[in-house]
Every structure is written in C-alpha cells, then in structure tokens.
Image (cartoon, rainbow, N blue to C red; front, side):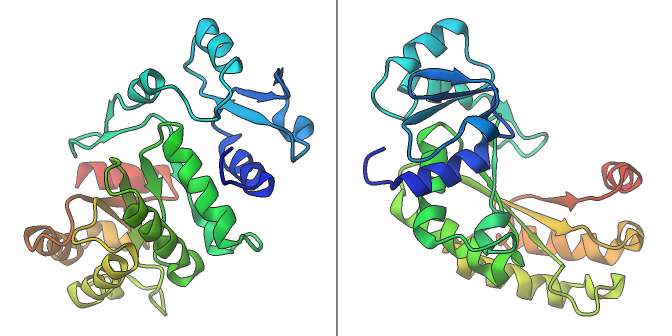
Length: 239
C-alpha cells in the first residue's frame, strides 16, 4: 500500500465496498467484506466487471493498484450528453466532510488517491459536505495529480437558509459556484448539480437561465440536478 496507513486503506475499503463484488484479504476472496475486513490485513479491491482471469492475475499482484490495462478498461462510459468520459464506478465524498463521523485528512486523501489508482476518475461532492471540507480535499488531490484525468461533480443550493425556491437565483448560485471554484482550485466546474432543490424549482425558468449564464461565462461546463424523487427526475429530464 505504499505510504498509505492500514487505517486509511481500511477506510477506503469502507467507501468502496458497496460498489464492488470482490474483496481479497490475505490472498482470499471475501464473500462478505463488511464481516471479513479486519485491518490492518493486506487487501485488494476487484471491480465487479473483471473476469475470472483478471481476478486470478490481480490476486498475484503485490501492488494494490490495478494494472494499466484494467485502469484503461474502467474509463468507458460517457456521462449522458456531457461528453465526459467517466469511470463506471464513482466515489462519493460526503463522509470526508465529517458528516458521518470524524475522518482525518490523511484517511480521506488516502482513499481519494487509492480510488484514482484503481481507475476511478469521477468524484462526487457538494459545497455543504463539511462546509466545503470535502471540496478542499478534492482540490488537494487535483493539485497533487495534475496529469490524471479526474472529473468532479459538485452541488449547490443547500447553503440557502431558508431553503426556498426563490433562493435559487443567479446571485446566490453565482456565489456558490465561486466558492466551489476556490475550494477545488479550478477555473470551471465539470458538473454542477442543484442539490435536491424544492420541487417548485423545476418549474422556475429563472433558475435554469441563471445556470445557462454561468455556463456561458465558462464557470460551469455542465449542469444538472441531484434529485430525491422520481417525479423530480422526470421533471428535470423533460425541462
């Protein structure tokens, strides 16, 4: 695991285990990672789309990182109409904001680096995760790995107080975007999503006009909506 501590590796497993079928611990495939994980054992994560031959080959690899060929195979999906080439498996980083208990910077960065090592290039965050802490940690990753293709989806809107449809206007969204740009250390957001806005927002032309303005200004490359209800997803698609 290189410079990563067993603790950071264990946390990384916790982040990944919901998306992977196999977990190899001490040279064996664990059928129930949640029960079988006993840090600081050596382990490797195997994506669900690997063949049996791939699994056998990885089990004999001393390095936790996936071989280059497998990394390349992971990056095969286009994200709808955005044209972004993203990994089939993404990494959510809400936990790195300390909202689900304390996570040290070393543990968070260890998990982020491990995800990229394994072929994940699509990270999900939000401006309210740890009041920007999650975005800032991803910003450090982007700075440390300038030659890796890493795409970030962040969210905005939940900083509104009160959280009302009227708050989803250009002034507020522009301020949220500027804050996220600073946190991430980038010139444009790969993907900005409205963060589970009130249903009325989906009928509010002014909100989407504001997003268009931010896109035209080069602050946002793509935008969308993070939804809580099927009805809202359908409204967003139909807009």
